[in-house]
Length: 184
Image (cartoon, rainbow, N blue to C red; front, top):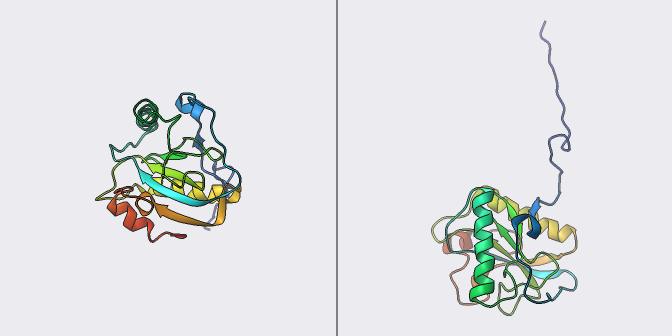
């Protein structure tokens, strides 16, 4: 006699929530500096989602990614003289998502479009290869989260940084990939 054992797990028991927002490492958790001036807030849902790359080394674990996010903030504030890190969110190769300026604050990522879009920066250089599958899924989930929470319009437009100005960002290989994504 053959016996079958059926084990059923709910998504919650596995730590998964269908349609849920990805875990976001908050500014406090990654040790962000305070902005040097009062931030300008975004009113309502934005129309654009901009994809960037950091044009530097990749990272594949939280400690390395966190150190790079801190260095981005220092560079933006100390070298550029910006009030804070420029990006809305930063994505590591392990799929970790770091809060930059977040959903409700105007960024400094896409000149002329900062108040109408969020900037999602992938840590690394993606001229000849694309980010990891984990990183790509993280940004897709994050954008879907932004739509579901009313931070991004349902009919949003996805663009690479190079679509809005003279830059190679987010790298040719990655740019060619995002042109195949929905909303591009």
